[in-house]
Image 1 (cartoon, rainbow, N blue to C red):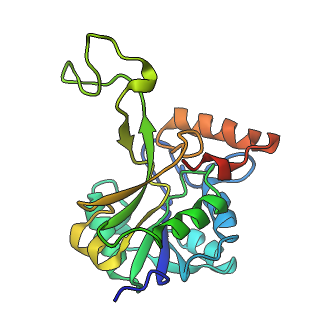
Image 2 (image 1 turned 135 degrees about the vertical axis):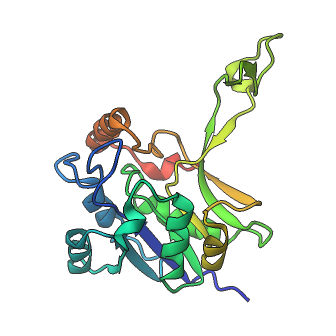
Length: 231
């Protein structure tokens, strides 16, 4: 019998990145993405353990000083040449725990309320689902290879009637540790989607999204209540 209370959070933090140089450590709203995420996770009580995985010893030392567990990652698994599947397999195989909650630092608008609510929901879902994935509904007109994929050309649909496509911002993914090792992925065949508002789930992937997320984060002081942004 599985124990859904045995959830170990893994927070991968590379010292370097390609699209945005040193994205996790670059100044972001008078802090950086790494420190902001640790501050948010420090306020949670839903994980058995929170492990920061990095090849960078300065990152690990800071995490340890702030009460987090650490995983020294082989530098080979922090290069852009290594497929992400190999990274998943490597990290999951070197830590203990029945379930893994994979949490990226690149979603700064998602704070402790999101993680607490996600784990609470995860504990209620059917065993028929093999993974729990944060997700966003995208109601826009999409084409693929010059063909519409979620609407018909005629009669033209109202935007509210569009069949939404689902994207994964990777705010939090929860699955059995053994499955992550087996699949080399957070995504199984029968996912449960935990829908978030697209703004609060903003993922930093390039310089433009970095600037947009920073602007949104700085303006959270105007009363943004992220508990209302769980759909």
